[in-house]
Image 1 (cartoon, rainbow, N blue to C red):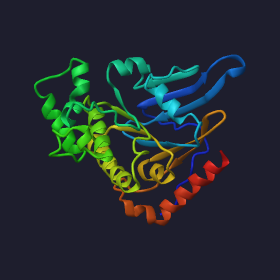
Image 2 (image 1 turned 30 degrees about the horizontal axis):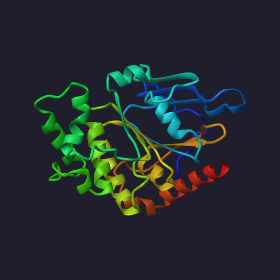
Image 3 (image 1 turned 180 degrees about the horizontal axis):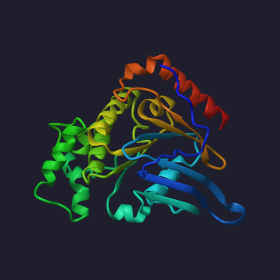
Image 4 (image 1 turned 90 degrees about the vertical axis):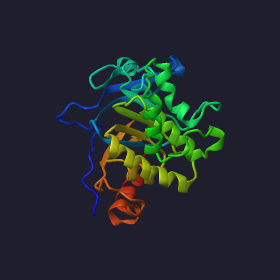
Length: 269
């Protein structure tokens, strides 16, 4: 299976309304001589239901862009829309959830109690909240560990809890900033497969930032390659692999070609 034609453009454009629309977005920090342009005029549309990965060298602005989508960082120019609404509105409506590199679980709460937390904070707790949390822990492969404290879970298990917690509000979009970066390779591989399964089962739109070429190519339907100084989209690469991917697919010629192309792009950054 070969590499499909890559898109030599700074945008993914689709006829249907996108889940996320980024239009000429720039993000800068500081002023005057100390001003740093983190992201410059990025235009990108993320289709609803897609799994899109972002990769690039350190300092290219990929995490900053993800934070702008989630209303954590203000833009200096351009617009971000989530299902047609500004990020602040989408956040208020819980249209998206964010998964960070660290699980950041409350150590005194059990796994199921950590998953239930967003419902409690948002005053949306119902009698079925615990049942929903238990169901999500089952979805992420933690059946039987509902009452375990974070200290009783491995790093990979804690990150599974954080994913379940992000899904408990039934977000339309899941934003993930290097969520598996601190894990060992074997655990990371297992969670890659689990995340693909969860994506197919939930239909959630996922934007996933990573430093790993293999991870970006394995997970993404499209890989957004960013360059630094200033941060910008260098190219968007279509990944011509089955959605029913297995780790063994990384040994196929098609996957190797895609990974090699991504590496060539990163070497230009």
